[in-house]
Amino acid sequence: MFYLWATLLLAAAAAVVFVPLFRSGQVGSGRVSSQQQRGKAREAEADVGGEATVAALYRDRLQELRAELDGGQVSDADRAVIEAELKAALLADVDSTPVAADDAPAESGFRVGRGLAAVSAALLLASSVLVYNLVGDPLAMSLADAEVVFELDPSRDQAALSAWRERLEARVDARPDDAKSWYLLGHVDLRLARFAAAAEAFSMARQTHGEDPSIDVFWLQARYMAANGQIDDTSRVIAERILARDPNQPLVLEMYAIDAFQRGAFQESVSLLNRALSNALQDNHRRTLEAGLQEARSRLGVLPGAVDVAIATDAQIPAGMTLFVIARPVGGGMPFAVVRRPASGFPRTVRLDDAVSMNPALPLSAAAEIEVVVRLSRSGTAMAHPGDWEWQSEPLAPGTEPRAVQLSATLTPPA
Image 1 (cartoon, rainbow, N blue to C red):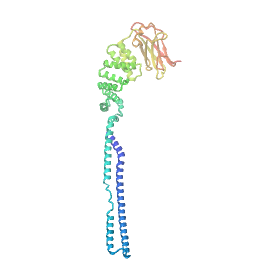
Image 2 (cartoon, one colour; image 1 turned 180 degrees about the horizontal axis):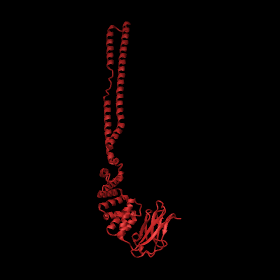
Image 3 (cartoon, one colour; image 1 turned 90 degrees about the horizontal axis):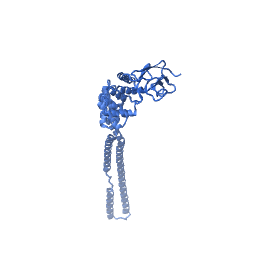
Image 4 (tube, one colour; image 1 turned 60 degrees about the vertical axis):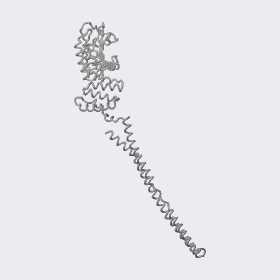
C-alpha cells in the first residue's frame, strides 16, 4: 500500500512538471504552423500583388508603344520585336515567385523534445523510489501504533500479539539496527512466554541502543524465566549493573531473594525482600513479596537480639506518609536496623533483627543497649522533620537468646 501511494504521488509530481512542457510544445508547434500559414498567405498575397504590378507595367508599356507608333517614333517593324521582349519579361517576372520553406524540421524538433521529457519523467520516478529505499523507512507506518503491545493481555490477545510479532520480526530482519523494534519484539515474546526469544531480542536492543536500565531489567527477567528461575553468570552481571544504578531495584532483589531461598540462605532472602519492600510497589506485587518474606522468616526462625514491634494508631493517617521502624543507639546515632514501609495496614507488627541490619558488620545482636523509634514521615526520609508522627521506646537490651523482645507502639499526631 505504501509503494502504491508513493508511486501515485510521484506520478502526480511528474505530471505537474512535465504536462505543461508537453502543452507548451504543442502550443509552440501550433504557433509555428499558424505563423507559417500566415507567412504563406502573405507570400501568396505578395505574389499576386507582384504579378498584377508586372501586368500593369506591361499594359502601360503597350500603351506607350502604341503612342510612339502613332507619333511615328517607332516603325511597324520594331513594334513586333518590342512586344515580344515585353512578353518575355512578363513571363520571367511571374516565374520568379518565391516558394514557402518546409516546416518539417520544426515539427521533428518538437517530437524530440517530447521524447526527452518522457524519458526524464521516467528517470525521476525510478531515482526517487531508489533513493527512498536507500535512505527512507517504508515500513515505519505499519509500526506507528506498536506501543499497543504493552496493553495487550497474554490470555485474551494471543492473536493480536502474534500478528505484532510477525510485523516486528519483519522489521528487524529489514532493519537490524532498529533498537526500538527489538525492544517491542522482546515485550511481545515475554507476553507470549517465548522467554529465550525475548532474551535475544532485548540483547539486540541493548546492543543497538546502548546502555539503558529498562532494557537491562527486561533482559534479565527474560533470561531468568528462560533459565527456569536460575541466575547464571551473564544474568548476574546484568543484575549487578542494575543494582549499581538502583540498589533497591525490586525485581532484581526479588530474583536474588528467591535464589537465596532456594539455596537455604533464609537470612539473606529476608534481607533482600526487606529492601525490595521499601519501594513503592503495586498492591499485588507487594502482597507477593510480603508472602515471600513471611515464608522466609518462618524458615529462618527467631534470631538473637530480635525485637517485635506491634504498631497501632487510633488517628486518621494522612495519605502519602511513610513508616520507619528503627533500632539505634540510645540518644541517636547510626541505626543498627531499619524497616521502611508505606504507612498503611495498621495495626501491624514489624520485626527488627540481624536480617534487616543496616551494616552486617554492626549487627543488632551485638548492641548492648538500644532504643526503638517508630516514625510516620511526611518527607519519606528516615530523618525527623516537623509534622512527623513519632513514638520512642525506653532503652532496652536486645538480648542474646533466640527470643524476640515485645514492644507496643501507639502513634498519635504531633501536638
